Length: 393
Image 1 (cartoon, one colour):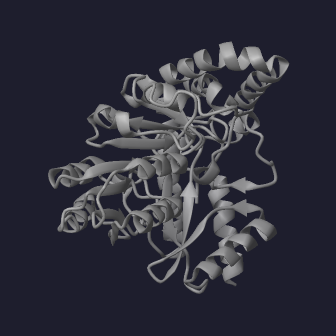
Image 2 (image 1 turned 30 degrees about the vertical axis):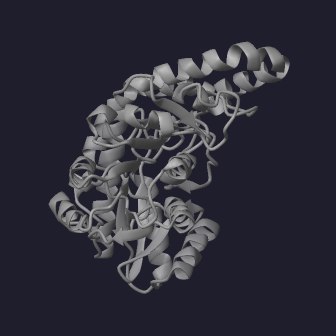
Image 3 (image 1 turned 90 degrees about the vertical axis):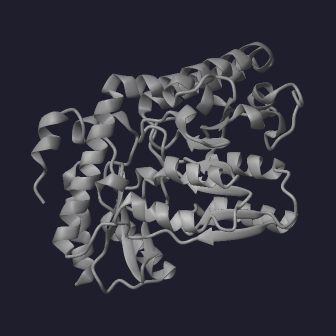
């Protein structure tokens, strides 16, 4: 598995040279940026400054500094998402945002809610809970995997829109299969049937060039702690203007009925430092170049996936049309097919080889989900290949 020339020549500052910018444990191979991210040391330092400001004079901070800080963070984020500040709220994470939207939906009993078999587990549970509570019919459509093309996914999804659902929940990038779904086409098909559209874009910010104004949806939520380098506890919920009056945060607080932005801005006393230091994460991105980061991560993930699939005689979960900074690769036969076997293999890779990577049971076998971030390089995936081959015996 030689390192591709396109990576070594175009991005000499990435890989090992940039690892010191993160606090990641040096004797581990971190191939799971997609789950929890990794916060740069400089951003963590900025977060501590906000925490210190709060504790030095709590009353002054909460009365005079908190709101301007939140508004500045939202204003800095908005252009990166292709929207204005209005209707854009910072939240702890995408799961919280999905729960907030579902809780306030006024759909009559018997309404159909459509998810997919690749909907994120926490979001699926939220939909299950609210459907049972409100008498909605929760339906799920099976999407192709491995996926040959976007057209194949669109066709399967469009067929499931009959009967027409009242609400669809769409992943922009799926967690279990790492597919970048053809979101616009899927959302347009749902809208054409009269459905409300809620997008779980947990992985998209930072990985994709987002223009939320061009996506036909009612709500779009994303996490910033994954591919935009913020500390944990920083995500956003964008709500279309027509839905803002009836969308409220999970915690109803002092600014109830004072408008969407005011309600989400303050939800009670909390440590919002991960959101307030958002500008420092954007500064980190700009220092390395957003385009350069995306190009490196996408090239590395795909080169690694191709190399592993060839070395193991297996396959990828999709071609580059449907991938970003994460790619699925089927493991060699013999490791099992169940969730328990997947977790056992993951633990062995962690404990015996100090490699952190998700293993998912799919299509009757086990797959690994490769993540690529600027601190990774091909040698990391070579270590994974060697560990898997040793365990295969």
